[in-house]
Length: 117
Image (tube, rainbow, N blue to C red; front, side, top):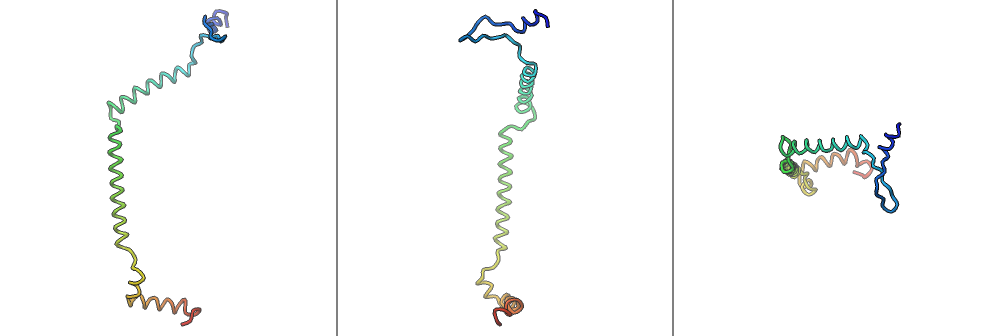
């Protein structure tokens, strides 16, 4: 590297603060590329979501609320079906002779040998 290039790269600025001197170096190329890509992304984002076909936050909110309402209705329908298909209470089983006969048969087949008939 020639002395001219080194002096251009390592050019010391003429000010100092608390004894700290500053060199006038160029930014790294990767940093400049990220900077310009960030600016380009910002333009694309603004165009897509504010001018173009992108879904706005208000539209997203409306869609999400509609989904919540749909899920809520489905849940309420499921609860209603479960409520209609609730098993009978023990008192209702005792009053029904069909269930008493089934219980007697199960008791004699499984339990009676140990618990006594």
